[in-house]
Length: 627
Image (cartoon, rainbow, N blue to C red; front, side, top):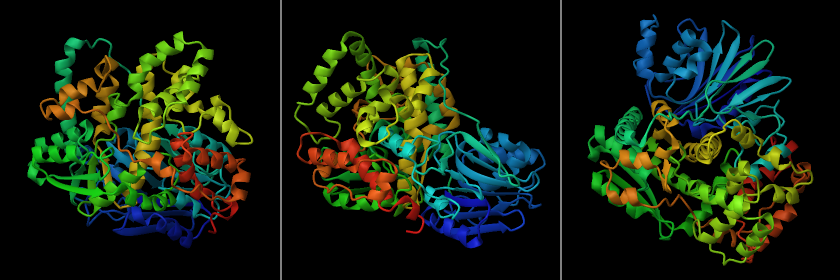
């Protein structure tokens, strides 16, 4: 796990060093640089040593010096690829470097290399023979990669912060992106917060011609469901056995490390499955598990994790925190985020990563299980929502929304009144918009109040609408595709990457293994969601691994009392010139903050998203690089 930065075109070596220094938290174990004034190509790297510690320095080159790479991530099938490449005549200098596998793999497979990789990655490969730079990002976007094409330079890096260090990048805020951020709660690719910076989407590559600086972005893979409708319920025992084998294989692949490794453990089914899979191949007493607990019992899951760790006999590490004391870290965390993120669980994720890093360098997680197996609450709401929308006239619906606004407001995690209001908000819009609006801090009507030149609903959610139109199956599959293509890469994985890497910790998502994902893509959704039960096949597959109480647990989520906290926080202070330039009326948000403080409204999602955006609006955009 590392950080990378570079550019082609104008710029100095000191610029490259500044770019790399801005992402030093991603790699505390070393740095490397390469510059060529003739081709005006510059590559930089920060190293977090995990595999081949002695021979992992980057940029790494082939023996002839024709192909070089800066790489962030882990390739879990690197040993198999190495054997295949050696059979093709490649000669390796390292014993087990996955980075060197990428160098030789590119020489043999070229732009088809990403399709052969089972792992998480973002890399830049310089091909001096073809005078090209080739960028690629893993299938789900576990590892970030941004770029800016300016008249003078093509700039890229692991974080927006690094790209903005280049003087050719203006750092002008994008009004369109700011509106999308408040409408989604995160920034859907390819948007970044800035007009001249793009996020390379998950499953995409970019090929840049060095001389002309022309480039093409291509999608080499995208998650699409292709259910095998010949599968019947009578196949469930066989499918459960197959799934269990794939889970164990996915876990074992991610246990390879030359540095201390552990597991995040919440006591929920996903992280518990990761632990059980690891225990199949390793002695339980050698496994290190990590849990963050809170003194507030309504948000604390540590007891479940503690019981499970005891059942497996792991080396369990637990830290219990006072949430009200922990919240003092929130301004610091939001201020250090590379881009705004409206997900309050960034705090406990950061705290868990910080705690784990005291003991290990790598941690396995259960991220992706909810998206692949229909684990979120909205899956249970889909059928009632469909019936409701077909039977309830619009006038009656508006009346019900007004009644829901009269419900007593609870500050609890995912309280009933909160769920009811969110559900009715989504049902005010066409079916194709339900999923993004259920997550939305600000629906299109509110966006219209906040911005002078608001985008239409169709523009705000164009990415989700395009995906919806491309899938003519049922509500469950369309919702699975929405969460897996948008919420997973641009919210969940972004959150985990930033929280972990701010603590120089590598996080590995077991459920995103290629073979496991391919299996899930072919499953009809009746094996994922049936009669209101979520994760149907997953529960059956791990029934022999896990205690019954784990399988029976209700999903709780990694929550914090953000609604209550926001009643005590002051509204953010922002720069008027910055908000004017993007046409944002901060007074509207200040009014919503005041209503929330008085308990008249529950604006938790909007206000947290605004708090996360505010640090990016402190200085006028034109001055941001100099600040």
